[in-house]
Length: 123
Image (tube, rainbow, N blue to C red; front, side):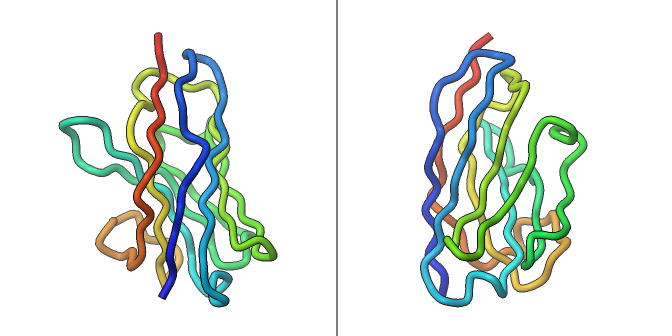
């Protein structure tokens, strides 16, 4: 089993940056692909991006491509989401999630979830 805890959220002005972290428990972190999702009030959970087990491949939703970067440090059991050029529409609760298979954008393919961290982007 994997437990995930996100941190790093907060309030930022449009155009600013934030880096989210997701710390995982357990010794099998490097056997999981990791994804980031977000959910705005009144909206469905949205795929942001994901990274493979070794950290050598990642892909992103079109809405964040070129602005967000996912990385991971398997020695620290941590995955990161670097968010630049933030927009008000990026506001939401950001969750990290673990999947046994890389490449899914559907939330149903992710087994373990963190509780989320709030990101608010003011205009």
